Image (cartoon, rainbow, N blue to C red; front, side, top):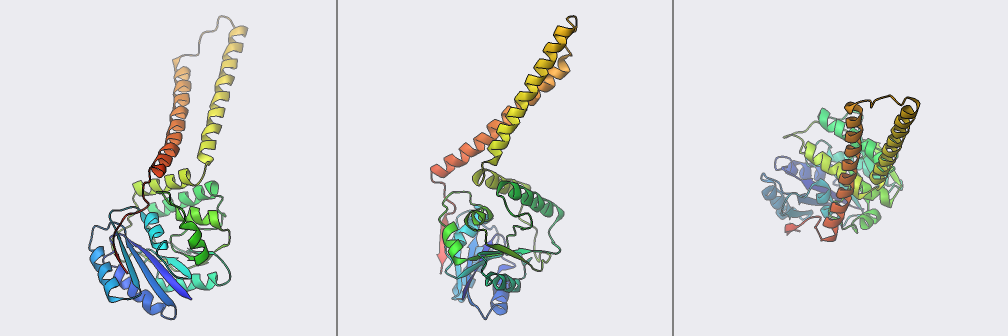
Length: 304
């Protein structure tokens, strides 16, 4: 069995060499292939990865022209793997590479995808909160099983890789693509460690961008939610109109309730309209970027 290890690299100059070397030692009984994708790092990652590819025949290196995002970098790696399975692992050493063996053993039971899960996560509170929100949204939008944690550390079978790499949209969401293709999914507990170097590259901006990719590209439920909100707003307005009309007929000398209630109704209606336009605009904008050929990634250099 040939095992490909996909590593999206972003500012990982201090960890990527140790990660590759340790994975090579711990998994030496497999036919290994490493696919490193440098996603616009601002440190010396390019030089380190280039040296690794030059010195090791089992390392394939792709340098992207700018930062496209983790999921785009993983898609690039999956397009270049040749193994029977591909393990996706971050470059920060929070997932020990020897834990890949547990994922492989579970996949050999017949599963297409095996996710990692943790007894205790060593992420920052903000990152854990974002992961929790992402999990809730994926359960609602993508109909993900409630007991499945969508970890970035996972193993994917060759046949499934061949299916998901046919996606050519500019905003891939790997877990959404996997859930589209198969329901033969399992998960196993693995160790999670504290970061060896630096801090998480997932800023609030990147987390919001990831959520929007999931919301807009892989589900129409946000549009249905907006439609439902519009209907509810309309019913509320009709109800208030009938209430005021009946009150006027029963008490002809009654005066309007005042500007406060009117302002609240107008602002509420306007806010629903603006949210509706925003959601519709996101769909239209994503479709426009897709139709005009926005690339998932652009390769600057390959070293195979």
